[in-house]
Image (cartoon, rainbow, N blue to C red; front, side, top):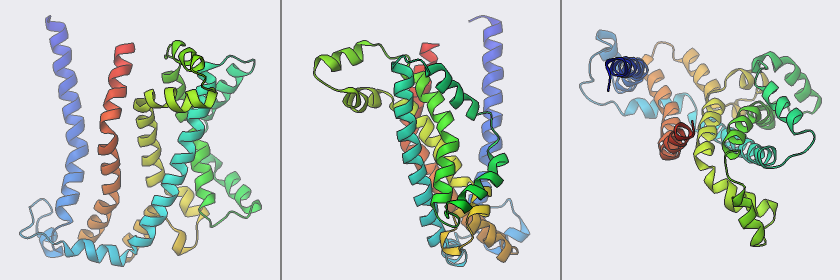
Length: 276
C-alpha cells in the first residue's frame, strides 16, 4: 500500500469515526439522563445516575398518553410502508425488465418526483383531503406518505433489478411461471438487500414525520407519536428527564427495525460496491 492510499484511508476512518461519535454521544447522554432524577440532572447533566430511575419511563408513558400515539404511529408507518414497497417493487420490476414506448417518460416522471419539495405541497394536499373528506383520518397521512416515497423507492429498486441477468426470467418461463409468479418467487427474493434499504428509509421518515401529521390530524386519539411528544414537551417543560425518557422510547422502534434489517442492508451495500 503506497503512502497516498494509506493517508486517504487514515483520513477516511478518522472522519467517519468523528462523524459517528458526533451522532452517538448525544443519543447516549439522552438515554443516560432518562434514568436520572430531576435533581441529579440539575446538578450535573453529564454525570452517570446513582440509581436507575425506571419509574421515569412509566411516568412519561402515562403523562404523554404514549400508548395511543405509539399504536397510531405503528399503524400509519407500517400501512404506508407496505403499500409503498409493494407498489414500488411492482413498478420497478416492469420498468427494469420490460421495454415499452413510454418507459423512459414514466421513469422520468418518477425521477422528477424526487425534485419536488414535499412540504411545499402541504396546502394542496390539505385541500385535496378536505374535498375527499379524509381530513383527520389515518388515510390523510398514509396516502401522502406513500405517494412521496414511491419515487425514491422506485429509483433504488429499479437500478438494482436492472442488473439481474435475463436468464432468471427465461428459466421461470420454461418452468411455466407467469409474470407475477416470476416477480414474487424469483425477482423479489434476490432484491432483499435493496428492499432493506428502502424499508429502513421509509420507516424512519414515516415514524418521524411531524408537519403533515400536525396539519392533517386534529383528533387527539388519532395523533401520531411526534405530535404526542410535542404536546408532552409543552405540558412537562420543566421535567427534562421525563422528556428524555419519552424520546428514548420513541427511538427504540427505529433501532430495533434497523438491527433486524442490518444484515440485508450491509449485503446490499457490499453488492453495490462490487458492481461498481
